[in-house]
Length: 281
Image (cartoon, rainbow, N blue to C red; front, side):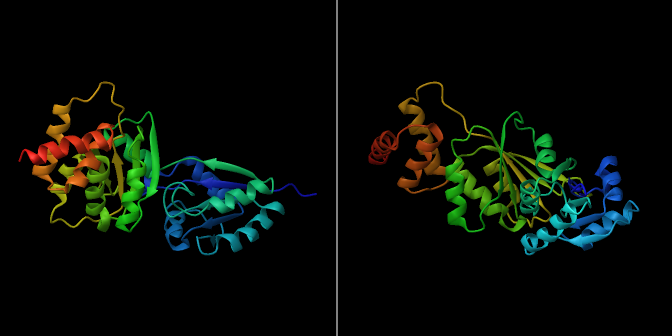
């Protein structure tokens, strides 16, 4: 009986071709077949490194059907490498179904690590990296995006998002509202010629981007929430309510919800102080 081949999950550069690892080059030359999310994009990479291995497509629209064919080839003894357009397959890219199918059929899955926008952005962000929570792409619709952000408000780890440049301003506005004015790092076009990492608070970035057109792929790093170790004084709550009233002109309800969330205190307590503050105006 023929021994099955292996599935190599190969990370590729996220922009700069020099980030290709020596091991990845060797594996792509030695396997029987390379499956790629976009064969046009992968051909540029293979050409740069003089890799002549046969190439086939495997993307989100054909992953289930084409995956069965690739599994059959591996069971027959061929080794297959899978690459996405950039970075590590399966990280907000296709590949998960193929990996799961290979494992289910007792085919060895071998990761070939390399470039990752998540890790690159974290390493340059200046925000804590000891614990982070990767959230993938934020929902495109504002309502769902706010719901997702609200669900992450108490996560203490650094948050990592992918975001479209055309939705970046809206995402920052929602973050300031749902998470508070946390430190953020906007990492754009990582490893490419126009790489940029902008750091500041969410409101700093909103002001900085006002009137600008953002281009390129964006990885957004956001500081995690913090547990309060000491009781919150009424004066501190009133000061925060007043700041929001003056600077952001939120409704009373929105001010109450945001202060309660930011300070980790009950909405009832904030409501009582907000009523007093409004009565004193």
